[in-house]
Every structure is written in C-alpha cells, then in structure tokens.
Length: 339
Image (tube, rainbow, N blue to C red; front, top):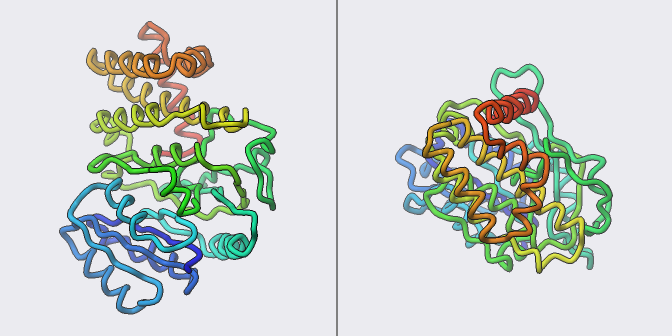
C-alpha cells in the first residue's frame, strides 16, 4: 500500500502544474501522485498523462468533466489508495526537506499500533513579490514529537491563526468514514475540508516543518479579495454547510470543542467582513441572515460566537463600527500576507 496519496486538482493549469507534480514526485514509490484534470480546455490533461507514462508506479491521471475544485477533490478521495491523503493545489508545491521528514513520520505511523488520524504541519504564504514570506506555525499550541489527543492541548489558537487545509494530512479512511462530500462548482470548499473531518479525529500529530507553499499572486485566484467579493454566494454556501455539519454531541474533550468553535468563529468573521466590505443593503441583509441561520441551527453556538470579541466587533450596528471591523481585518491581512 502507498503511504501517502497527494491529490493535485487541475483546471487549465498547464502554465504552473509541473512544479507541484515534480515536488510531489520527490516522495518516490511510497507516494501516489493523483492528478485530477477537471475538464481543462488547455494542455493540462496531456501533461498529466505524460507524467503518468513516465512514472507509471507513482502517477495516475484522472480526467473528469468540469465539476469545480470540490468535485475534483471528491474524485481524488474516491480514487486514492494511500494510507494518508494530502491535497496540493496545482499552483502550490511541497517543500523538499519538510516532505521527506513528513514521510518518515508517516512510514513509522503505518507500522505502529497507534494510528494518526491527522498530521498538522506549518504552511507558508508564498506571496508574489513579497520580500518576507509569512509562515503560519503552530509551535507552542500543539504537542510535538508524539501522537496526542485533544485533551493534551494546553493552549487555544489565537484569532489570527487557524488550521487551513494546507496544514493537514488526513488518514484516508477517516475522510471516508466522516462522509465528507464537497459541493461541486463551488469555491472555498477548503474550509469545509478542514472543518468537517476534524470532528471525527481522535489522534493527532504535529510536525513543526513548513511543508506547504501556498502561492498568492494571480489576479484570478479565488482567494483574491476582489474575486471573493464576486463569489460571496459561494462563501456563504460553504459557511452554512459548515454550520450544518457542526456536531458537538460527537465531541468528548473540551479542547476539541474549543477548536471547532474557534474555526467556526473565523469563518463567520470572514463571511461577515466580506459582506460588510461590499457594503450594499443586500449584502448587509445577507450578513444578518447568516447569523440568523446560525441561531436557528444552534442557539448555544450562536450565543457563544456572538458574545465573543469577534462576534461583538462584527455585529456593531453603525457604519463607523463596520469600518473599524474592516480596518482591523485589513491590518491582519497586511501582517500575514493572505489574499
């Protein structure tokens, strides 16, 4: 069995996909590199099949009609044969040294009776033109060099930091057992992928290496703020799906629940800020509707988020209050270099 499946979803990615594939190949025969062509109109499929011919024991190319990022990840999970599962978007790549260290830990885990459900690593905002690349690290928040459970976590993550899909390697069967199925033709499904399966995770491992290089810089990227403002319907769809998937009755440890609430708080903040950033009456009404949706689904979670610092800041009734919240968001954006 392969130790790790690296899924590389591609759509019209001919200009940059080779870097992602070449770095994934470094893992050698223990790795399955699964390139999912999502109905591209350029040479993406030809490139993928060329890699498959050159590396038949490592690379598989899967073609499908266009279903969007979520549909490509669903296909990747359906076809994955590795014990563990990692997503690498076609414009990103995995760091060589960190990758080797990660694989060494996963090889040991595969032989150990103590299963790792989720491995967490650092990631870098590889922002085009930036002199200093911001690394999101979790040192000091998660125990290191051992398999741990939620009750071993001593400190909660700050509001400025959360675990993205780029930070995560899942046990493949955990993903399947969680029932994760991402919506098709929808952006921002990464957030659902990083949230819903974590409800079911019991054993975790944090390796303090910066594995994932997250490219920021193309004008058409889904995380570009101007693009996000045109796709608010999709952001809200994913946010509401996360609310639907929130299942506190499955959670035993206080730290586990704190993690999930923290993640939901961040997602509610991003959706609310973007709606306030757009600023028209329809968007402000949509923000209220989102919070009403949360209240109708889970009054306790609503009360907890609404009473927190972010909840109060995001729900100030005046235009001046909304401006303060947006200004704080842009300050954090500048510090960390995202979108």
